[in-house]
Length: 208
Image 1: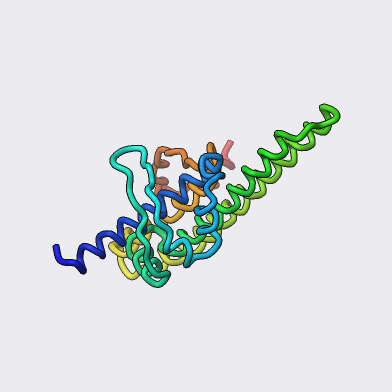
Image 2: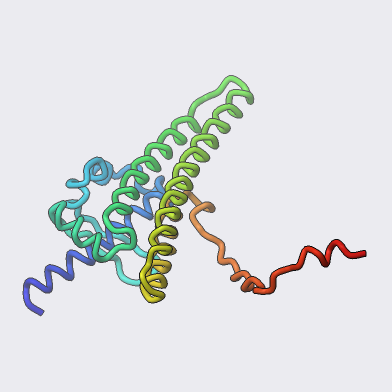
């Protein structure tokens, strides 16, 4: 493997590591709340592109982010990630929100309250904020789904239509994982049976 192909492989691996890291931050913000360098890197796209860190994954060896220019990150994200750089940047913003929300929740949990009513109010405020963030993501998914439906409808043949359908499903799943558990998992539903081609005759219901 020459130097050019070796670097390209490192860049692709680094892009995927960044994606995995952002998902982990969104799902478990408390685990990353004390990492000052990470929080600084999340503030800007360019800083995130240059960020270097080992990322633990559930199965297999840890993977490493790779310092690169923002243009390089955009190019390889668009080529190798579902939803491209657009989804990656949305994950970055969502990771910032998750860390801020986690910090706020920790501060309020440690705050002394004068009565049980005050504690209940704080709890409801936190739940409301979580619901607000969930709704934002669902609206994003709905908007993306409407766009994808149009793209599928306008496909020129069945092969392109099938490809766009698969791409749409992957993009929607990528958006869904931005939610906090348990709202980050899409239940696997059985496919509905194909509709009957027989057309009901309304006159049959008028007899008798």
